Picture 1 (cartoon, rainbow, N blue to C red):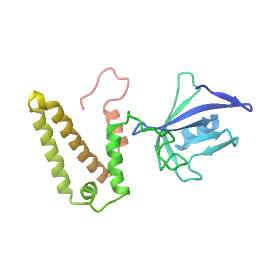
Picture 2 (picture 1 turned 120 degrees about the vertical axis):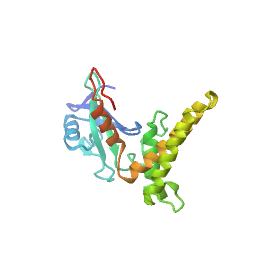
Picture 3 (picture 1 turned 30 degrees about the horizontal axis):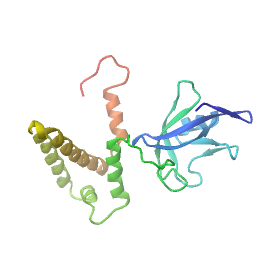
Picture 4 (picture 1 turned 90 degrees about the vertical axis):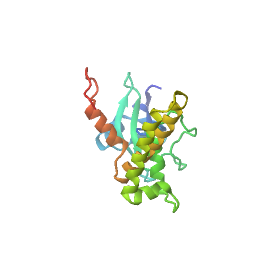
Length: 208
């Protein structure tokens, strides 16, 4: 979709995408002022065609959208907000304005979301919550046990190796996600470190 001109004002279509899960959250329009305010404040701004006015997401609902990057298409006439929502995005109270759950979701983000749900919606019988709030030694021992299981799976027979590696790797990633949550480490922190070690557009890669 290309830009439109209404009442002498240039409006650009904007798609908002969760930077972690890659889920499409909403679409709207923005003018040049909304784009600039989004870049400078880090909060999603748009232009309402029905009200003919600038608006910042969350001013009414409280569910703001933090934007880490504003990306334009090749023609500079439509934009993508890479974002981190601070609550439901849709006015109906759902995560996304789009009803169908996307299949191309970052699996680590799904794990992190699952772990975060255990914190924000605690249940007395939650295994995840017990690992986050319980004895640290129990958690790190579980990580060690799962790492050994991954090693064991790598030595499994050829018929069993692939399924065993997938199964045990997910168990290990789950427990790693729990320890990250316990100490407030996010996927953005991991991404920052990966980019520090492997900056884009370098002809040679450094060792991890």
